[in-house]
Image: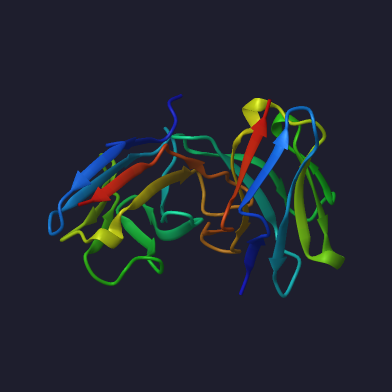
Length: 113
Length: 116
């Protein structure tokens, strides 16, 4: 069965410093993987997706993620945090059929001034 | 083009009452998904519907929960005889197709159900 594990439930950074949100996946084959962001009281928005093309994926708002098969990881990074990045981030694996999405537990990102 | 609409945004029900949650997909989208987010947890898939058909309800509790997506009108998630454990945020997503790799799922703002 496919699953994702987000290693940190909460990450706090200072504005202007790098962001690292960690995600590990479990799958018998190389899966596709997504990152979604959820701002308070809003719906989820797709940040980026990996679909077995380039292993380094660039998303919106300066975020990127690298698929590392040897480490079964898909960590989300951003060089410099902005206050508006404060939100909940979900690592997601889509199942092959039917559009079902499997979500990680989520990581809440706080950004201090 | 308006996004996915959900109403109400907040719903309070007493134990034993019924809750009806509505979801209007984006224009042109005929695929609807419902997810539930319990406190401190990620979203969990509940049901996938296309117009007038339930395609996958493997995540739906066996009792008290039902969903529909009629030919006309919004998709409805119905919870009968609510209990405190039903308190959660319920999110609806819509897409143009069934393949999650090819068709992005767009999420609504959610309905936060509180059972007192």
